[in-house]
Length: 226
View (cartoon, rainbow, N blue to C red):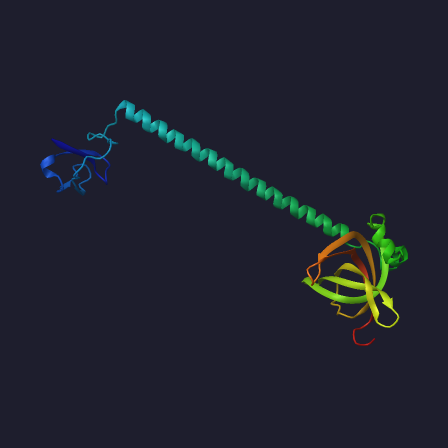
């Protein structure tokens, strides 16, 4: 009785007399040494004379074609994902550039100041949508400075001055780009109304205030000189 097994190197099917079970033999095809197994493996892959039966050859060809098809489909999917990602990146860059250009002041300081509206904080809060895109003016005290990056900051400015305690109420949110300002500076700000801004306070509650993109800022009184 013969034991049939595949050479691990040449993958050729070998038939060895069962008396050599567990011994080491030399493959006649690749000359590699291999051990005769004790149990017959699963169905052979390759015939010992190096040729495939017509049925096996057809099956292998079909399997190979199936694998190639799967590879092509996966390659197309990956290519599609990469293309969509690059397209999104390009669109994001375009819109970002457009947004920056739209927010850049196209008017001189004199034009900004002459076109600015002076409205009450209450009016801006109640009828905020009516003023979106319009330029308004406020004087106030910087109560918080948050650095975003570079020369870009977020300012919270109290615009209502009390009789004894200075500016403490009617706070607005200002997106500011320019020289660093300090907490407690008194400033004049001309800006374009962006809408309302909701943020979380240090007490973990939410607050909603008017939001402006600054077009021009002037330092009136430095902190500590008041």
